[in-house]
Amino acid sequence: MTGVLDLFVVFLSEGWAALAGALVLFGMVGILVQVLKAVSGTVIGSKVAWANALSATVGILFIILFGLMGVPALSRAVNVTSEMTACGPLVDLGAAAAQVLGGLAAVRMLHTFVRSAMSIAAGGSNVVASALVEAGEALIGMLIVVVAGPLAAYFFGNC
Amino acid sequence: MFDPVMEKLTEIAQDAWLFLAGLLVMVALLGGLFFALQGAAGAAFGGARSTSMAILGGIGIAILVLFAFLVIPQLGELLRGLQPPPPF
Image 1: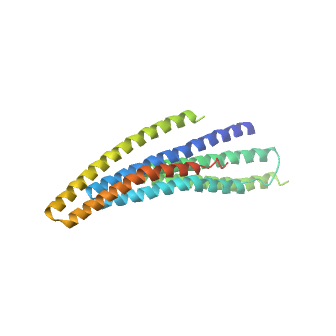
Image 2: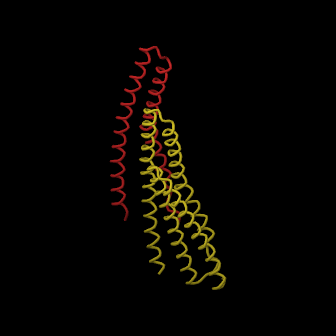
Image 3: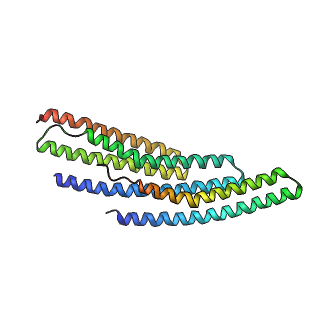
């Protein structure tokens, strides 16, 4: 069973690497789109287009930096606090399941940041809002896993 | 496992980058021509403000194009270096 969970972790790790690469790729293309918008705004003398492009560029950079630096820090913090204090086969299984759940939540959070960066590049703020709500849901799911670990340790007994 | 997908995504992003870079050059050239016309017209009619605005606009476009072609690739390299390993 733990072998299957380890396979899931490997799968999630590769998904994480792919999503991190996609975040940088599409973020850079999005910043180029915003520079094009700024140049067009300069040519036609539109200060609003310029301001929009500048704010969107800063937003994309912020989303990329938070996705690449904030999400791993959050995930590591939750994984550290979810370490089991009990022992036995069920607890080992619980620890492996908690790792898979933490990985799923981390990949989901990174996915929401990829969606956010792409939608900021395309100028859609609604998608950003819903994506950030999804990131919050994933974080709450990780926190529930943190609570479930000590509860399981309490019921199955400490070593 | 995701390498073929990443290769396709990279191809798409490269195509989009080339298209946008070409479009940026065209828009910047048209903008530069427009500002040159505006500056020449201002100079011909004695409009100092129009000429100075045209010069500033041309400088602004040049700065933006330089930002796009010099800073963004370096920024991409920097962010690619920041890619974290899986935290789980």
